Image (cartoon, rainbow, N blue to C red; front, side, top):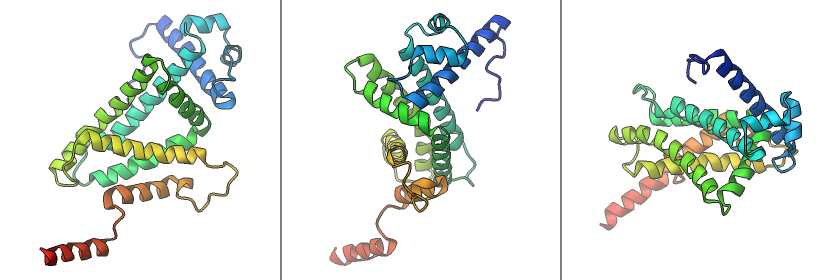
Length: 237
């Protein structure tokens, strides 16, 4: 996260407007998490934020949908910062890509588990909006995805140059990495909340990180099997 306060350089009036906006977003996040987007009402959000509904419209002219996209904006901003700090920013050679990737998965799972109720709502709404007939909605999620890919790609290119990973299209690899992390989070969200999952890799961020890191960096083929296949190929040639 940036060490510079977001309100630095703002006038008193601007700081107060920012404070009110943040209070409205916190209230919206809370109501969305509890009720879901469809059942949430502006009246309840306004009451929880301790403002009149008319004041909400002064900040979010599009009402509930504008609030939803503002919540998405904040979430994507946080994920972007987490991504850059965990893996995409330059790192000393004693922190190879594999290690930084594992850190990213741990932080992603921890981030998700802290906001699980809200994430479930946002996942549903992102699919609904992303596949709607409104091209602006679809373009919004495409831009956010491209933003994350663009943040991750330079670290992958640097790792390829150092020989840490295979030389492949960096953006394609970035998409694959992000989709694998997202896939595990979606699967975690779909699990029965009353199901005993103490033994599941999805119960603990550290176990999830070990699993996904092993799959992506070591693959599914056992080393002894890979060595045998290599030897066989040499003899056949």
